[in-house]
Structures are given as structure tokens and as C-alpha cells.
Image (cartoon, rainbow, N blue to C red; front, top):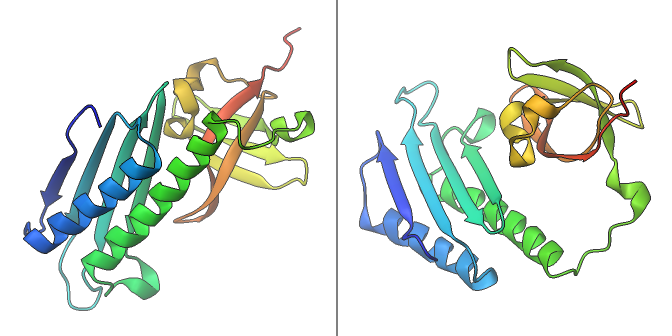
Length: 189
């Protein structure tokens, strides 16, 4: 890694055990993908309340050249409000590992891409001033996406009708699109 890992704690007491767990997980990612540029990990405890548990949030940002920024955010919510911090960290790093592995395979040409799989959906509605929009699949499923979900910050260049591919993830209000990538511009009149 060219930039030393950055680990920050907010409302969580830094412990050697947690710090070692995070560093061990970072090393596992480095072994998988040797050209990781940087890794930032933020560990946060939102609040402490007996009825709602101890909700932790772990956010991992990994930069892989050329221009790939992978972001994973895991929170203890709903049924797992009392999950230990180490469990939330492991879950976050498991998701990050899967993303890095997928990107690494793609960069090494180990994944096949068929032309009909390129465009998975199209932009159906955009709210540029608010920074979000919706995409619709060929199966008529609609997914919310935020401008930060777009690869290479193409949000301002996006138009209704543009073809995209994306990754589906469960959000707070249901399924949403993450890692949205512009594949085909809708021809303008």
C-alpha cells in the first residue's frame, strides 16, 4: 500500500484488539490485491441507549488504480443492534473483500462481459439539484441511487434514458443501486 492505512475512531474507545483486527483485515485485502493505493477505516458509535442498543457504524474506503474508489458502510441496525463491534467490523471487511476480489478479477480479465449484459438498466428519473435519481431495469424494477454511487463522478453528465450497470444493495428503505456506471449515452435529438 502506497499510503499507510488510516483508522479513525469516533465515540468509540480505541483498543488494541480492535486496532489489530482492522489491521489484520487490511493485510488480507492487500494480499488479494497488491496494488491497493490506500485504505481508510472509520469506526463510529452513533449513540448509547439501553432500548436501542449500541449501534456501531464502520466505513471502509479503498482506492485501487486506475481511479477505483470502493466504499463499504456497515451499521448495526434492526435485529443486530446489540452486535459486538468486532462483528460489524468483520461484516464490513467481508463486503470490502468481495468488492476488491471482483474488481481484481475484472482487471485481470477473469470475468466475461457479454454485450447484452453491459446495459443492465436505464436512468428513468433524475433530481440533479437534490443529487439523486432512479434507474429502471428491463424487468421494470426501479432502484434509487445517490450521486455518490456513480463511478467517476459522472452525475452531472447523466441524463434520463442513459444506459447504466449497477450493483444492488439493501438500503435503509429497501433495495438501492450502488456502484452505478454509465455504459451508454442516450442519443440526443
